[in-house]
Length: 280
Image (cartoon, rainbow, N blue to C red):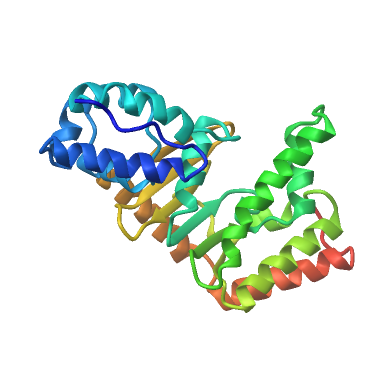
């Protein structure tokens, strides 16, 4: 069976590739579960490929071509669909982030990327790359700020973030950088654009010590969990595993300050930084 025409990488290649996969699978008379079985992946994973929330990796694409008889179409075109300026372990999670209608996130020890200002992000990347050229820092900062634009929409995605108190107490850049970023977060909370909680030091031992959690929910695909560390990350779709991380996030929320108390702490800490009273 001849394969369809190669995709134009300038026209939403991920969405087009997913639509072509659904078309080819249905033409072959296979359900998502039946296609997933020889690939050793779940039906939900196939659904996420078809909806564009997961990237199709070359080895999976090669096997899909073999099973569906598509003459190398998916292997050829997954390369265009997967082009990204981010590392592979991070790129898939960020691409899913842009499609999510609800994001729940906890990041230990720092302000999460979606809530960072330019000055904060720049200082953070300079710490990551102390010998990096300024052009590299500029590119990383621009990419980080591009991510934050998903909050320009007044309603979606719904972002519920639990900030670690260590993230607002540890000065990144200088006091004015911290004051600016905390004021930015407070403004988002005051206009009801985000749901904000702070996990205080007094919470003691918590379920997520040592790692961050991001949960992403979609209108037409099962939820995903992204777990990250220094230079590593894993996007998870197994329902039982995602449910376990949802419970971990629920425990974090239960131990965090209520939104009003969290906002008060953010604003008072910003004022301390602005007046030079905040101590590292």
